[in-house]
Image 1 (cartoon, rainbow, N blue to C red):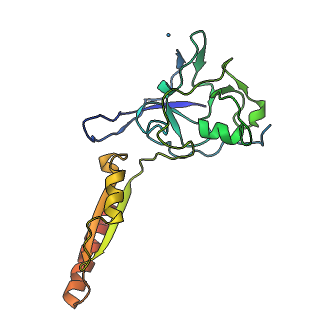
Image 2 (image 1 turned 45 degrees about the vertical axis):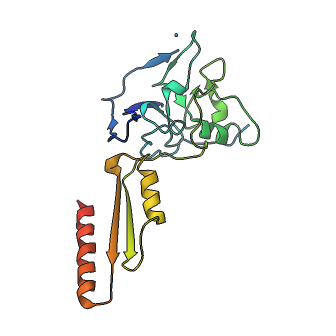
Length: 214
């Protein structure tokens, strides 16, 4: 069944550490606004921490068919209807395209009633009218926004200037999307021309390895 989580939102004044703020246990929650193959419910692993539409945190709705999450604010509901998130099946736009619209467009209802272990053709939309996604997509529908710990280890030959290297550029770009504690970038300059330098290199690698295990 659909689940919600909350993550801290980004600020416009630079990067700040963002941590997932899990809700303490499921509780009934209703929100309201002022032909395909059998698709069994997959074994969903850890949900993503940030909305794939805006690449941000907030009140997030977890897809029941994949690891994607979407901000509730992107799904304005009709004034005269409500959705019980706990008992409804929710699928994100990428899963909607895969399940209901593999070859031709189909309206996106988002929330469904039915057995998640049965074919989606047996599900019925909770809403009478399809949903219209609010806000502009920052990524393609199939993009993944994850915040799993990531290590970029850059080995640099001492005779090479690392300025402008792809590794540094990648680290700088990723730092804007990942929490500070989730991204580690290390540069290891090495020179194996002498036995002493080889020993120094081995010691540095061993130190990094021990720190990673912590």
